[in-house]
Image (cartoon, rainbow, N blue to C red):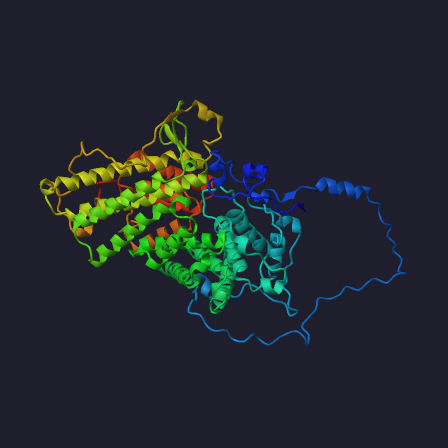
Length: 639
């Protein structure tokens, strides 16, 4: 494979016009100005190499073969040994650095692990690597490199002799293939920016002290171990994690090292390791400590986080993790991080230049409301409903600002219903990345609507149904209508995630286009409602402890909707570590009060399909959680 130079990252339209492409997602601004459809961007790693095997073989055949002389007239050149430690080799440890308050702690599974990297006496790292050709092909295609970037093969020179080289090869290659070298429109979490700010050092001594290399290798090994269900790569992952943790803490203690992008990257990857490592109170606490450490680092770095696209992406990943932590622990989003996010958007040209930005203020508003309710600051039901409705208006505004390139088509199947389709209606998005944006918005909106419905039920739990004011009954009716429409929209997006339908599919011409109104829910008819709030005559009186009897869907009050703390922690770790953008929305639909029996069955079947067909390991356990969830209106068997 011959390196062919760094190709242009711009779209084909800009390359043909020989102008600079701003590479905006999902389409560039230059195409938008010319009112053209942006063709998207190439996968750069697929363009960096070309296969020259046949050409090289032909040259080898033409090359005259050298005669070998077995005589001993010429002495054999002795092999030069690797340099060992000499008097000139520095052995004095570096002076102690000024300590930093940011220190990460290990989960119990990794806290007692020994170091990962074994250094030889001569200062080099033993590898024992086999044929380099085995390192080229990753789990999902070929791994390519950019100019100045150390190839995965060279990066694996850090593999020690104390661990089987095959584990390290598979671990590092798996991370690159699964999280870095992914299609631009993939609907999954990705670290595709890693090589923009980091590459392994060409010196083995430095690679042995690289927290990023150790962190990503640990995650890759853990993924391999979980898929193979093997103990050996699991032990290797724990050892690697322990070393990565020590290296990262060393960087965090340095006033300069703590501000480096690579340190933040290592913290983020280690946090991802914790979510994948499993459930349990200690594992969850370790993950939360990583989240708190990342938040503290973001404050310390300040606006310096936004010096590069990679820094911006890391900050956005931090905000998402912090938001999940706030939802789980009933906390408000930190105001200083909200302020930094606002400054970032202003730097990028304002909300109009950042599609999707307007989705977040309503979420932060409800997080603050949830916190104020828990603190007793807000108790009036009318005030609470007004804030909920303001958040809903914010969502409507955010969706209306989605660019034309983010809009989806709604079609009615003209043939018999196929496997993988919930109904005869399906959505077709420009790509899976856009579909994930829509479904992510719908999922968080479902959480907020379920929280609103829960508040209404709780306020009138002991009130006779006929004494509940009509306004609140109408509000509950509107929430249920919105929940059902949003759930159906999520289910209509499922076929595209499984490749059952594609935007370029010629069969779309045979489908019947339909107007879509699932996401624009500002005007819900206030007629045709029936009273659902309050206690009807003859019903069993229930206390406030029975709040999950009527509203058992995940909400901001109980986002995991599990009775035991252990079950809550397990579900949180599963959802926080999932890479597919479809799993969380499907899980919420299956657990929703708006979910019918047929919707729930479809969700369970598709979650199992994600596990079996797309190798999303968390989806199988979440399918079991949905299946074990009680049906609407039925108390648990142990009650």
